[in-house]
Length: 299
Image (tube, rainbow, N blue to C red; front, side, top):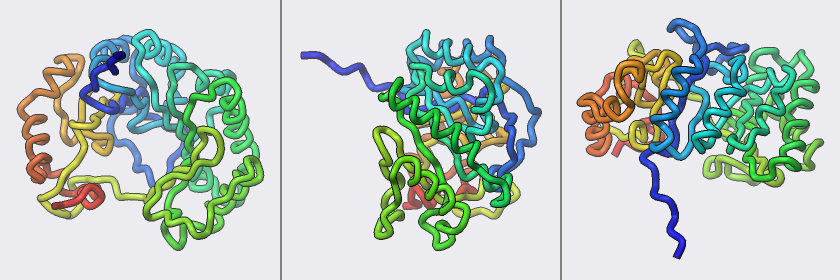
């Protein structure tokens, strides 16, 4: 009998290779920390330690990964360590030479395009045809060259009455025109977070949220989270944070330039957080101000 490989400790590790973005969306707060790009040396150190721990890495926490000038090298490092990649981008920089080829690399398991970012930055007065054409052209090449690649087109707030307004409808219509797809009007988007369009291309939608911050009111002290059990994040400078919503390192667990990932994940602060989540207690002030306690359940 062929045995499946042992399950790894984490489903995903978010590695912020750049906290710089080419856009500034209303739903994505500005980064206050020092802006920068992760070095090849630091990324290599992280992947060496992350490979045995995670099923995949997401090259994103803040910023857009297509900004990084050495993205090809970073992807190849993952490939050499057999680490699969989940990449999130607004897709605008697909216009750069070679970027479509980059995203077709066999190490990449899934690409998610945040289509809502276009109208959020440029409004409805700017024609998205050229932007969408690049995304569609990438998708059609993937159908042929990478049929195993998952592709998500992400739109916000389809479950909201306002979610099928002009901005989203414009995108949905263009997707329909290209792939002969349209969302069924009877679809209960409150229960379903994605719709298959064609092959491994999906329409993915969710509800906007408020990023947690210490100056926001406390929402509760009871609840659970998948941070540090399913995933965690590593910021551009190597600081480890418990989840992808701690964009300013309010809960710094350690830095991979000073300690190993295992030492950081098994530190007293990290253990206190995970124990609290198991017991449905939110021990950190930032967690007490996070809207995800309602998504995951308070009780």
